[in-house]
Amino acid sequence: MITPELLSYIRGELGKGRTREEVRADLVKGGGWKEEDLSEAFRIVMPMQGFFAPTSPSQNNQSSPNESPVHRVSSVSSESGTKSSKKFIKILIFVILILAVVAGSYFYRREISNLWGKTMAGLSDFSMPSFDFKKITGIFGGRDREEASAVNENKGAIPAAPAVPATRDCGTSVSPDLRDTSTYQNSVLNCLGNSAISCTPAEAVLTDALFPTDFEILRKNIGEETTCNFKLSYAADSVLVDPTGSKLAGQYVMCPLSVVKMIDEKNKTLSFKAPDTSNPSLYAGQIYFYGTLGLFMEQDVDKSKILSLGCSGPYIDSVIASYKAGSN
Image (tube, rainbow, N blue to C red; front, side):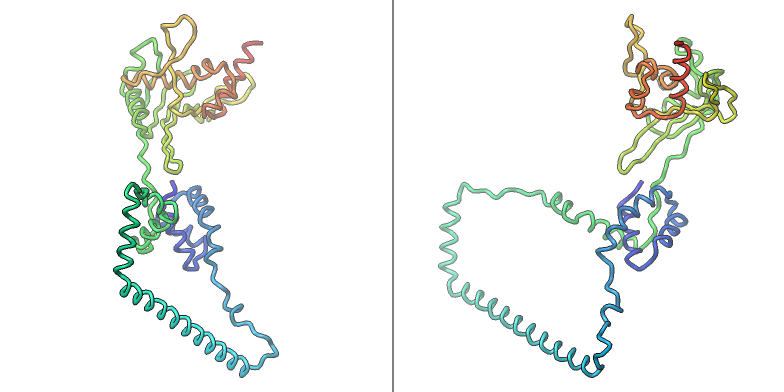
């Protein structure tokens, strides 16, 4: 996840004349940052560097080849003296104006005070609008000042990448059968269910002869937002194939946990409702059932509808291919 400290550090190091590769190497080795986060950070910072590009000394020192050194020195001295004279005159005029205003205020202070009192008396019902200066300063450079402050506090220290929670190993169990409580009331599914509820990364193996066996809870940080997903995969050594002949080994389906539903068995027609999260083991079983079959039943095996939920993975195509093969 990109942080203000990371952007400030990159901007500061580039401003020192260091190359992108030097800064990137420090952040990877010293801060543990991922390449995708650094690429995004450099894309944000690099366009700003043009505003801070120093003027080339060779351009400042260029002069006509036919111009003699003596002439250049004398012309520079003359220009410098003229500029100094003009600057002195401007400062003198400014000081005179300030003194005149102060003197006038002193001699006419009573008249000014009376005029101010009459003006404010006529505006007794007038009230000044309130402004949220925190928001205003946040829009106009507030973030830049915060980033600069962070760099000064760290004194150029390499910012560390945000900590990612360790992945729980929930163990191995059989795949759940929602009609048989003995298959989902166990510590493995309880671990997966609690991890899903708390959005903590976890993994487990659920043995099954037909459906995916690797069950994962994934936590992703995108900017300042955190998303929680489930992922069901076939093991890398699976020998199963779909009706098209494609191997299922490594195929997966991944969806946001927020889309998970459970079948409403009270209705005579097929319908889905929000899952039951009061029982973590049962909740994990509902996630597994929804990812393997329920997702396709609810969305009428329509790939566009499934993808619109934020789901992805080649397992989606395999299930749709199996469905079409069975319909023919």
